[in-house]
Amino acid sequence: MRTSSGHTGLSPEALAEWLVEWLAPGSDVVVPIANGEPVKLLDAIEDRAERLRDVRMHQMHALHDRRYLHRGVEGSLEGSLRHVSWFLSYITRPAYAAGAIDFVPANYSEVPQLLAERQPAVVIASASPPDNHGYVSLGVTGSYTTALLGRVPFVLEINEQMPRTFGSNRLRLDEALGWCEASYPLVEVAAPVPTERDRRIAELVADRIPNGATIQLGIGGIPTAVASMLHGHEDLSIHTELFADPMVDLIEAGVVTGINKASYKRRAVATFALGTKRLYDFLHLNDGVVFLPVNETNDPRRIGSHPKFVSVNATLEVDLLGQCASETLGTRYYSGSGGQADFARGAQYSDGGDGFVVLSSTTRAGASRIVPTLMPGAAVTTQKNTVDNVVTEFGVATLRGRTLDERSRALIAVAHPEHRDELTKAARDQGRIRG
Image: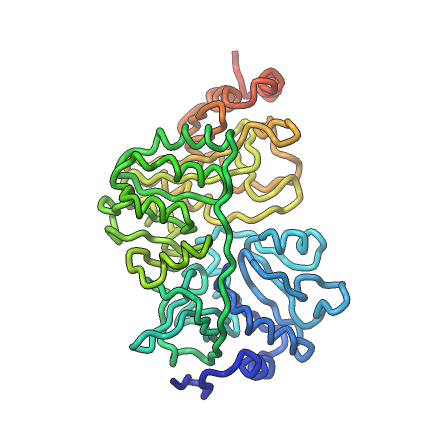
């Protein structure tokens, strides 16, 4: 098969050779989230990066360590490539703290448009092998890259081990500007092992998820534990950002049927997947899971169209107003906004919907994670008006529609008992609690 640029199944090295000549100084390049990264092609681009000037590589949640993530270190490609993160991972977190990469805060639903406004030169992405009709899929991603199809040229790395999936993440191979071939396994990330505190919090949430609900579960031990406690439920549906291993369990157990959704009935909807080989094998040629662009999956109005929509996301710290700092520890950035605020707002739009923000009551050192005020410099990820419920191992604080006095009392009641007196005093000093 021949592409519009005249390339026919090149090696990653040959395609990289062409790309570094083609990219103008100062170009913006978009790389997909997580396992959508074209690993061998990026390896080859790095090997030739001395011929590039000020090319910015935009990506969320990178899974591969690279030289251009370590500016200032010998061989770091300074002046050639610079990473721009839209959500920090364990790989990029230390690089950002060291000042070696840039970071853009944004709600996940808005990332496609913000990227498009930069007029990127190209998207370089991993894709599945073509089907009998010449179509490839972007595999385990939809995300911001799918939203750029038809707006930005694509260069593809056809990975023999990428699952062929369904949804809006498909294109004909001959639509690509160029393509190469490779074969390597996807990065596997096992579901977190929930702690006893995680399981207690998960029980409180699972008990409040009705049969027939459409669910979104975020990242972390608590959302993972929530999924494990839903096996007694009936006719659940999935409309989520991240599709992970626990959702496979729910589908295979018959708990998820998808019959009550407003759209894509009997199908799970996601914008990217990350997990184990079992998950990737489950997704291959499975039209029961649909990958859509993130501006669709995370659109609060689309989320809210589903009745009884339930959103479950973790946070790091909550103040007595109900503000959630989910991406920073004080001034130190830990991750990014992701889709937490998108889904919290969408759950509020849903008829019978409910949103849960979950966290353990204390840090490992014993400090309260429900606080009078957020740490100085902390970023508010989900604002007070968008938080329905805050859940710790000590209970559920329902905040929506409550007065400041009621909110403060509810949050103090789910804080660790050792910290409740000091929180009450602080609330009185702030004028939050009256009488």
